[in-house]
Structures are given as structure tokens and as C-alpha cells.
Length: 107
Image (cartoon, rainbow, N blue to C red; front, top):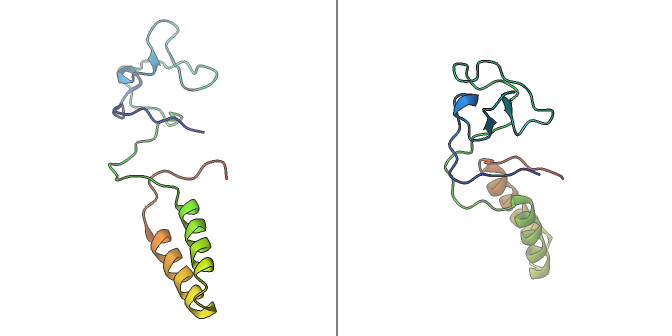
């Protein structure tokens, strides 16, 4: 599971990150094992940094749960196999064509 920190900007360097421990030994408070970071103020964010920038977006929903709900209602409507098949195809095409803002976790 992940955590979103609302309003936090993506830092360019460890030294400008709110999650960086500046007292000696300097380290990242997010990475398990407290990786020591040398010269944090002048160096860019390291490759092992776990932070991921989330682009500006609208309301996020669980697309997989939406597809399951639509499948249920399509089945309950009982419009016949051909119509149901067409509706499921349209549903999958529309939902799957949308950009993924945050990758799925734990499924």
C-alpha cells in the first residue's frame, strides 16, 4: 500500500525533501534501512528514491471495480447475448483507453 501526501511538491534534491533527515547521519526517512545520502544539497534525487510524482488529474476511481459493476448491470438488464457482448466490449474499450494515473497495487 502507498501513501499520498497532499500538497507536497516533488523535490529535486534530497536536501529539499520534507522527508529527509538532516541531522547526522543524514538519511532518507522513507527508505527502509535508512540509506545514508552524501552531499544531499547539491546532488539530484537518487535513482532509488521511492517518491513518484502524480500529475494533475480529476477524481480517481477504481476502474476494475467500475467494470465489475457495469458487468453486473449489463447481465441484470438481460438485453440478449449480442447486446450484452457489444456493451461489454464498449465498456472495456472506453475504460481501458483512459490514462492510468496510479498503477494498481495488491491485486
